[in-house]
Image (tube, rainbow, N blue to C red; front, side, top):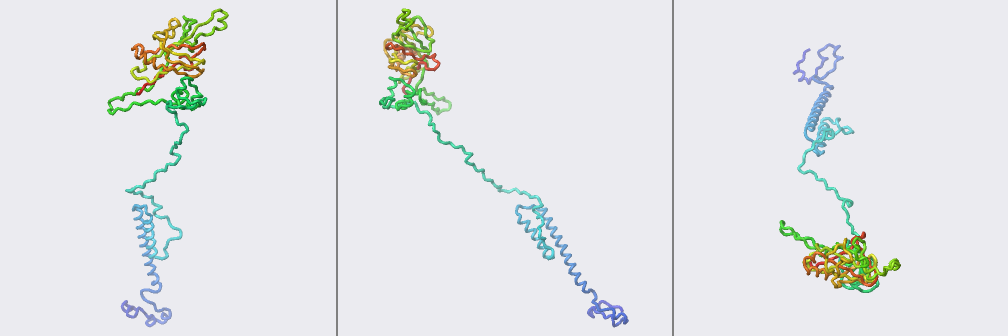
Length: 400
């Protein structure tokens, strides 16, 4: 029998095969629905699940490719959000598709980072400076030399007497008094040979106009070394002793044993000639003091006295007792007892002032003669001495 589709729908899609067929067929066929059966009801939902799963996978792949091609910023939250979106879509489509227990590598870790320049670069903090990098300047135990100045007033000497700095002119200077006693520490100028002191010099003041050179300031004092010294002997009047390392004065020496045996008798007196070149001395400046300094090689009870010579025409390499100029008869200054190894001072200011008054020739040279007192032999070091203790002339000026 032939059935039409409309007839089947009107009869609720049921066909009773047993009413119009043979009996052998009736018992073997059961009613069924046309169009679909129970197995068809399960296949249709599965097909939809497969289709939506494929669509979700395609969308996830497309989204992943978009993230790979686009720049990845430093904010890792954006990548995590994108991954969460993909996982949500897949989970909604099919609950069985869920992330595994072990997380897959993130996109940010597999793609090299892209560095985007910033308008506000980070500034690293400057390195801290440790205490070891900063030099320390601690106090020093050495305050440095003091100024060479003689203090006014009275101070105790080595014997406990209260004396002023002028006391040294009578006894001379020597190291232990100048460095250990109260008077020595107060008279740094007088004891400058034994004290590490300095004389203040005035540096030139800069000129207001750059084209004008500053005027140099003249020194407060100068020290002149002896340019000529010689011992002259009355006993050997024609002998020149100018090359000796010592200068000897003696009034009337006692004859030696050899002289007495030979019958020679008294060998005569010994005097000393000294000369200083004054070309570096400014004779037009007022003089405060001019000091003759002598270093003793052999002490005596009387160190002698000094006079200015009547002329300056003598040479230490040729002068003798017979050719030596005499003193002018005016004692300038004298010494008392002198001791070996110490410096002693004679004030010859008047002689220097007189030389300036006499004229140009006398202003160029200062010539002195040292006479003995008594019969004691006194010996001083000459400019030829290897110890450097030759005679000196120290001139102090008034003002600047």
